[in-house]
Length: 323
Image 1: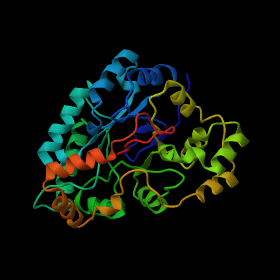
Image 2: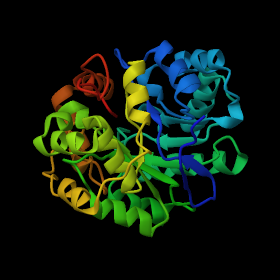
Image 3: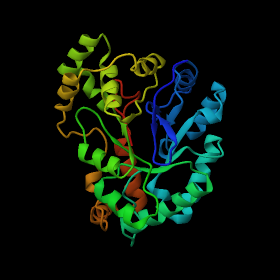
Image 4: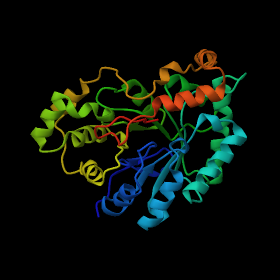
């Protein structure tokens, strides 16, 4: 059975550099996850409360018969559960749905908070304090954030006691936030990238197609190999067993330096997921503007979620939410 390379976190735990992302609205397949665990050596699974598939993932893990101690399970805390006490309750609820006694990685899903009368910074600080305590208790073996930019991380560094072990952010040939990557690495924060195929957009780029022909690989394998070769923890999504297998076969070749540089030049700043630059680090003016348009918090939240729910498969050519 193939063993994927690991990335060592600042707390000395090792996370597999390649994982399987999951999602909602057609983005989860029980059979595909079981196949990934049993046939593809996948041991790193990424999910979130928001995706609504934690209970389904529990069933897939049980059926796979892969021992819990061999798995790396990541899930995420949605902003609707931010706050000291609610974060703790949400984490335990996720554990119950997943059928586990602990999480390998628990992430704050988004930097915006949506608590009326409180700044994003204050709510993030309270929430992070809860995650730090759950880390100390062993309920979460590591803790981190998702979609946080440098200003958000700088505030968390000032307000908290432990820097996030991981920051999970959109990363693909068209969206290469190297300043954020280098900041994370300088602070001991491992960088994890989602949407490595840009929701399929990268698969048809002429350069990537050309490289696929050169190396005798698929376009998705070129993108994933490029990401991993940049030392980015990478979590492609798919609900198709054959594509999951294909996405895992990226360790038997290496891109030449000139080809790595050519792909580096593909960055054009486009995003295929939500843009956290709209989330202010101090206060919540963007948040208040959104709330005025939508009416109230719950209405805004539901609109935000529905606006990102589209597609039926995965990154290998289909659109869908990646948050």
